[in-house]
Length: 86
Image (cartoon, rainbow, N blue to C red):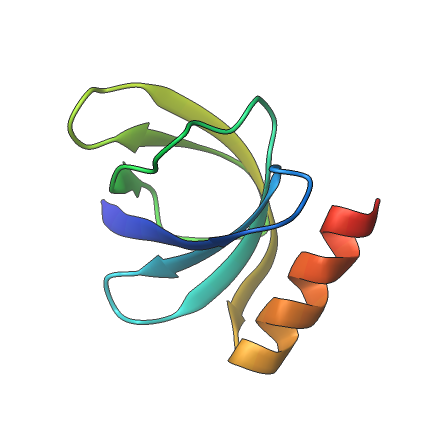
């Protein structure tokens, strides 16, 4: 299982920038409302498409669509802005 932390949230509250335990960055769309604070998330290795991640502390499940996997900071910010604008 991989561990993820949310490093940025788009203006719409659904676009997320995630960083895994290896330091790689990913962009995902949250398929529900965003919590007020983000716990550490645990789930399968990152891959494009639908994923379910679990909050490490509470077990709460978050349904996400990974839009971009293993991207650099510039790509991360561009994609985050693009999703937030949709």
